Length: 181
Image 1 (cartoon, rainbow, N blue to C red):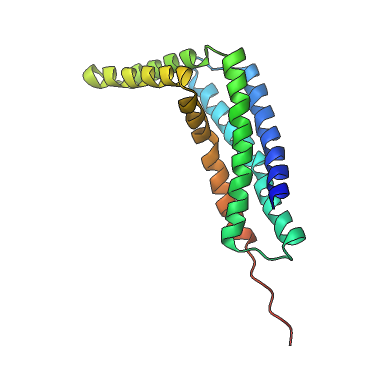
Image 2 (cartoon, one colour):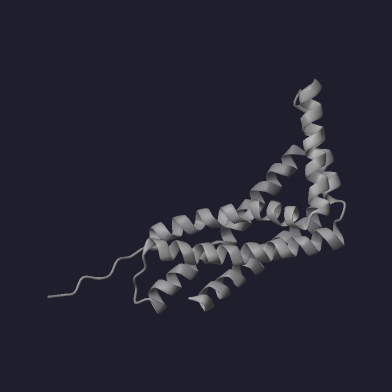
């Protein structure tokens, strides 16, 4: 089981990490263009779903080749979640290298974009100031606290993997075959 998790987690991790690294290098942080932000988000989630297709493949491979064609929902979900965790960890590590060594100003640009969006939303007064303060706190924590950085980055990808694991486990669960009389 461990070999299966590591293999398919690694494959999914390489795919999503490579895609993220290339797309961030090419696109960077689109300063204020709502259409570009939406396109980037759609492409990012599509890449996550494509890479997490290896969750399905990994569970199916385990069920069919290592577990006599049967798997309970719980075990399938566990395998899928662990594959997702391996892939997500690779994503977090890749982004950590890219952010800290190649794009250290990313959060400054991203925070500025969020503040511009907040101004455009029409929020005024204390609510505006509170929103700006929260954005700046998040930016500062992201840049200075490795645990915050990792948690924030995991929150970006791991839920997608968990959802794919849940769906895959529901589809692939198979009870023991009845003995023929």
